View 1 (cartoon, one colour):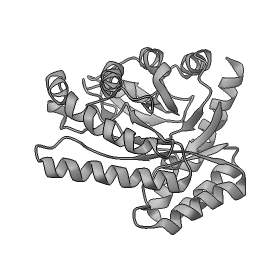
View 2: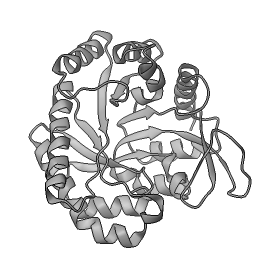
View 3: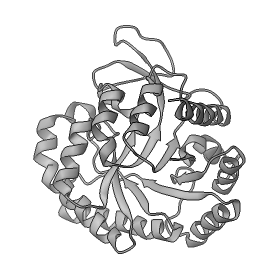
Length: 287
């Protein structure tokens, strides 16, 4: 297991201009991270080959790895030309992943408004989504890159929908970026979702949430799950997710790849990320 940090965890500081992505990579190394996961929020790698080279050089100079490159995407459209443009755009990001030197890349596949995130819509659109993912995975194979779908965005978030898509794509280099906390967004018990999907994981995100019932509004700073429960980001190991059991499941599965801290709580993001990193390492050693 190699424990590191997603740049997403510190994206508030990148967006505010307080830190650059290169500063974030330095911070990750300084605080014990073994790898950095690159998520282009607050910076843009499209058309900026020099920044990709600088990121790769910075990580190499610090002796940490670049693990995964994660972007958004949406293959749901009734316009064939628009779909083709989106697939081509994601392929350009595969080129960026190759320039970064990573062997893992996560891209989203679909987004719908909450009332439309039904199993009926998913079943109707599965073939189209699978074909788009298959084409991207086949393109990525030339670089030795494994692409993946993350369980997030409500529509393709529950473990069985993720598995259904993986089997439909049917490529050895298409897997899942498994976010242990995001199952709660689809009202699936995280230990159940992790147990079901860890065998398909190319990458693991450790994320924690506080959770309150749908009829007990806790006020500002919370969002709602698919069925209306209240969720708020927490420091890994301090929230309501059974993080000890989650990490035990990941460890006992034999998974030995990259694990990234993803922090999206209300605390200062440097404090929250470092505390989560320390908690994850301690729990991993204890279970």
